[in-house]
Length: 231
Image (cartoon, rainbow, N blue to C red):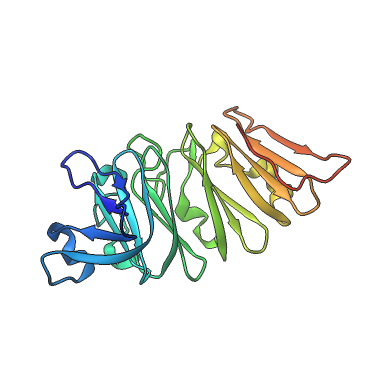
């Protein structure tokens, strides 16, 4: 993988003959590099609409791009020293990144919903901020974001419970589905403004959908569901 260092484009490209990222002199300080050109093994590379983030083989993360989208450090309360011991990266198209750390905890940075709201700390009553649910993220194994609307997120813990934050009416508030999401979840599927969760008994839970009541549905079938997709 590699980066395009244009002043206005921050999206990755694939180098045809290598799985190494070529990091320009401008970003050497982040990697502790001394040479004029540095090659560092990259495990994962993702981009949103204005920034990119690379997870290096040593568990550190390098970001570059527009600060609004999480491409510079510090970003709110998150600093470069926080971007260590990371196992997986996620992003929201309209701004912001999320990282699962090796201990199963989660950190987020950038603006997560395309408007000037930091979902770590917002007091807007239409949103649940991440800091209010951070302690519930224990052994996180997967994170999903709504595809087009709101800026809502759902994290799946290793114990089968689900944690949500972001725009309440687009799945960021799981209150009406909390009974179903407290245990037994094996997979989360993201839609445009809602989430589905598959339970270990083959039943399915849906919440979100942009309605003031935060619409929730629970489905069972004569034959347990083992997997599904949203189009």
